[in-house]
Length: 172
Image 1: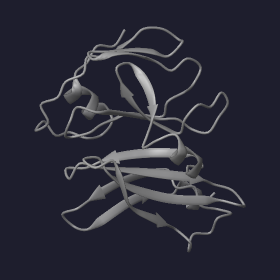
Image 2 (image 1 turned 30 degrees about the vertical axis):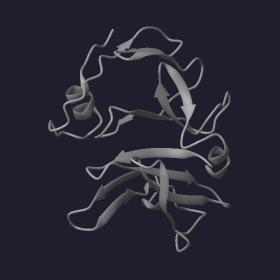
Image 3 (image 1 turned 180 degrees about the vertical axis):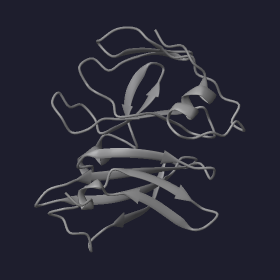
Image 4 (image 1 turned 135 degrees about the vertical axis):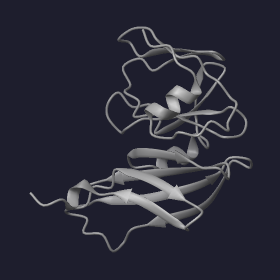
């Protein structure tokens, strides 16, 4: 059983910054994917989440899921222990295969949607969490869709850059 707080969770997922006072206690209970949170219980059943992000404002928890069966939603927010599609159920059809999330100090949630392959599709969505509004969509039309496989994203507002890993372009 793993018990941690938000600072430890942020360290584990690669974001070490303790200026966010919010805390979640997380207990991974069993192989069913049940996760007990300090604000409720969320069960993922047989769905495999690919990470979590906690918003810097409002103590909001976001969980993405790859497009594998069984598939319910691509991106969810946990509210009162329930998986709620984010930003809403209708928007879910726009996602192809959510691969990574990044939340920043401006209370924005960045969603990397990546489907590698011959008919690859790639998009980076920028959501304003205060307004639950899509701000921008970035597409990567110049990528070689037969080789690219965008996997991770980090956003650096200080330098005006987004960093994306593309293991598909690594030499064999």
